[in-house]
Length: 530
Image (cartoon, rainbow, N blue to C red; front, side, top):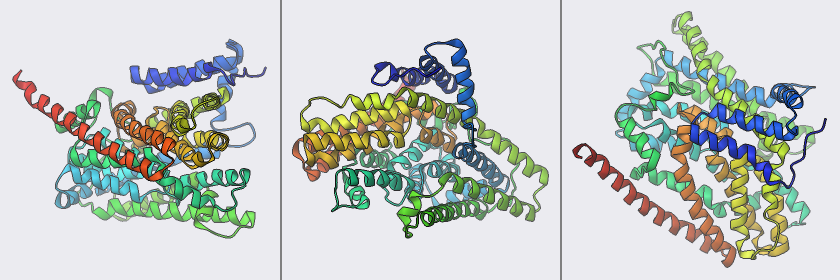
């Protein structure tokens, strides 16, 4: 029995909308994703109970085995998650986490510096968004915890320095992927005087969302522009509750582990440095093998484009865990402590694994429903050419939010943006493609079903929906600024005026947030006297 087609149907957006709405309202991510998956499967099977049941089993199996081979990418990603849980637990029993916190006390004097440290690490570790989210969160958490920074604020710092940074970094897995898509468009439109790299670099100053979101993050960290749910989270953290205790222990948090009293900072930083070096080296190695197989000369961007990122990360994780165990044994750490740490560390990652599996499942359902293509089709029709960039931005954002993937949004929307701009106004092709990248990242950045959002929650040890709800106001405000800038560049055709508009919008936004944060602080102080 064939699946029902929902191409060009508004009903195709129903499952992701239901799942996302339920997640925000009920704050129960797994149940909400499950409802969205079931609804989508029933729609695809024309509400046949028997067919739907077999389809659910098939899709669950396909997460690990597609009928002919293992789903290596999924398995490697889960393996890397478990390795990170195990590694951080091992570092904890070595005393490295405590040693880093004590070292930070002597070097960092306030929470603002701890947040800036996190942002700095996120900028430096730009090679891959998954790697960024998990590594930066675990590296910065002891420091931000020590200074009473809420886990929600930490997650916001991590998430905004993963995808928004990777999407403007040519030397990253994101940059390589985007350039591979641009290469196809250059051939299609016979743009022989440009290269994928030159086009990518030109798109960077027009990626108004990524630039505004990152600049806003720095302002929030430095000026304490805490509003809405984030203000409540920071107030709770100031009382010593780094996450909401009523929701239990968040994914990625290790508790109850024995800690050595003689730990050193090297016990913490050594394994993480080793992990970074191994990941970069193995990604370049696997990419070089791919280039050799195609008979192409080596280049860093080419190697990243052909790299097996999931294999590099899980292999690096296993090697680093093994090396850390050897180091602990050399320090006479009891084997029982190591076994307990491995078990608790991997167990702490299971909630994130469950959410990730459900997110992958609903992404597959949404793909079969062709939700992204339906949203993209809304761009077709007569419209003033000056509105093309902002329309593309909004549709790419809707696609990214509904599907939870930037990569899929880029693949669908970039050809459409190029085609529409070629037909309406060829001078808008660059702003339109930049709008795709900006919108895809915005949608992915605030979607509860986005894998990078899930991993940012996990890396920071924050409840997933709490991260989504606290980050959303800032993401929406940055998107408003970006939208206005895309309107301006659409009608003026000037990159300089568009960028200046985004910068001016950011200044106005920061001033408004500063007033709102000051008002909130005054209300908080006055509350006990009422």
